[in-house]
Image 1 (cartoon, one colour):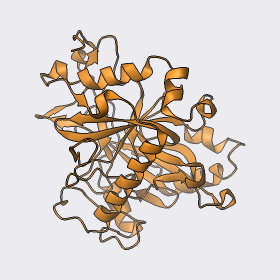
Image 2 (image 1 turned 45 degrees about the vertical axis):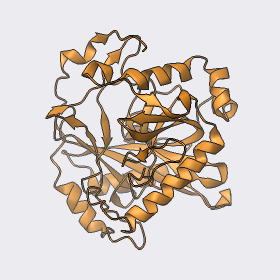
Image 3 (image 1 turned 90 degrees about the vertical axis):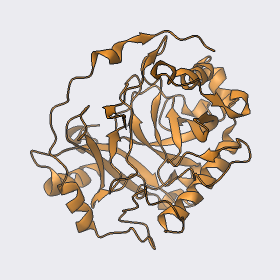
Image 4 (image 1 turned 180 degrees about the vertical axis):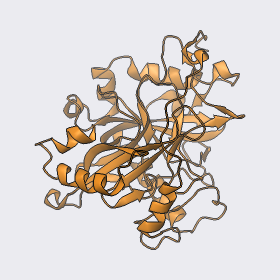
Length: 340
C-alpha cells in the first residue's frame, strides 16, 4: 500500500493523519517510506483495540551489501524483532507476521539479528549475497515468507518432539494467501499449523498461516483445511524445504514427525514457548546471546531499551536509498533434482 493510497483510503480514517505526521517528520529525498497495513494490538476486549501503522523504509541499494529495510511506527524508528507486538489481536488469536521475502522472489532476506534496530537485509554466505535456487518446478519462494516478532528459537533448548536445539532465529512463517506481499509488510495472520524442519541439525519451525483478510481465511481454521482447500500445497512445501539447498551442494533437509504438519493448537503452543524465550532474551536473562542486538524503544525493563532520539540517530546513519543492483543471471536457472 503506497503512502498516497493509504492517505486517501476512506476505510481507514486514522491512516491519513498518521501518514501526514510521518511524512512531515521523516520523508526526505533520500528516504522513501512505504506505508504498511494497519494492524490492531488488542486486549481481551476487541473494543479496546488500538490501530497501529508500520512503515517500511528502504535504505541502500537492493541486491547490494548495504541494502536494509528499517521499520517505523507513528513515533519513529523501531525494531521489527522487539517492538512490533507478537499479537495483532489476541482475542481472535491473530499474530503479526513481518514479511521478509515476497512470493516468487529469490533474494534471501531476513531480519538482521546482529544490527541495531534489526533491519531486514540480504543474507550473505562466503562473501556472496544469497538467492535461493529454483528447484523445478518451483520458482523462488512459493509463499510469502517471514517471521513472527517477539519470538526466538532458543539454541540452548532441546525440543522434546524434534530432539534438536533451536536455530537462534525468530520463528519462521509461510503465508499461503492469494496476495503477493511486499517486503516489509506487517500482516495479521491466522495460524493453521506447523512443520518441524530439521535444518543442519537444528529445529526450524515453519508455521503455516494465512492473512486474516484473505478471502479464504474464514474457510481455513486448521491444517486439514489447507489440504482440502489447497490440495498439493503441503506436499509441495515439504518438497521445497527438503530440496532447496541441494543445488548449493548441501544434503537434503529432513523433518521431524516424518514431515507431518502439526495442527493449529500444537502450533500455538510452539508460539507461546518461543515468545517466552524471547522475553528472557530481551530482558537480558539469557547468557551467551551477545550475537543478538536487543536495541528497542518499547520493551519495559529491557536493558536494550533506548530513547526515540537514539533510534532515530541509528536510522540517520544508514546510507540513502539507491537504485537496485542487477540480479545475477544465474538466479533464473532451473535446477532439476530428484525428490530423494
